[in-house]
Length: 182
Ligand code: GDP
View 1: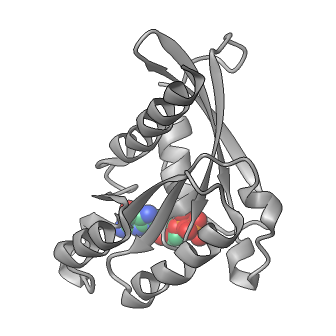
View 2: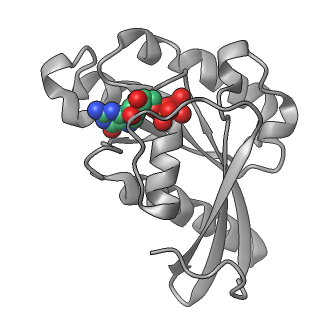
View 3: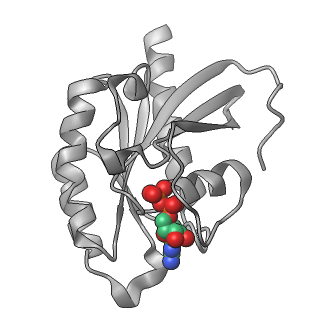
């Protein structure tokens, strides 16, 4: 689980969660940062973030992950949300195709406001709800391939692939930044 907040780290990374409302961003973050799931999570207003320390090789990385905390509902995410972010999890809900159709809009926003080298992982969440699926696994995969993104389906509820999605992003950020340092 998360290491202590005060532990000395080698690098601090900022990453952001984006995607339509109610796709599961807050629950993905609480799973990753605190191993919790909230059935009736209510959107709160104002940016929230959580930290998690991750060991990559012999380096200790403190990942600071920002959550929109409901602001996407009002299209009120400002450029400061993206400022300095090296990675993003772009989340849609596999049971609601409009949330998948919005992915391109979120990518445009990322490209307008974000760092051009940003590592983006496309995440199809709620994979536990296969019986209500509206977006096929293949659709997610091929969009990710076309846009040059990593891709994963997750379930925050069942804690499937959540760790893997965040760690994929963090490892890739680390790879890019350590190449720059050399
Ligand atoms: P956000 O608005 O994108 O931050 O979404 P939330 O994390 O608040 O989740 C919205 C709703 O979806 C809540 O009722 C959650 O309990 C539910 N939810 C989130 N992730 C999952 C999941 O993986 N599976 C299922 N079945 N429900 C989920």
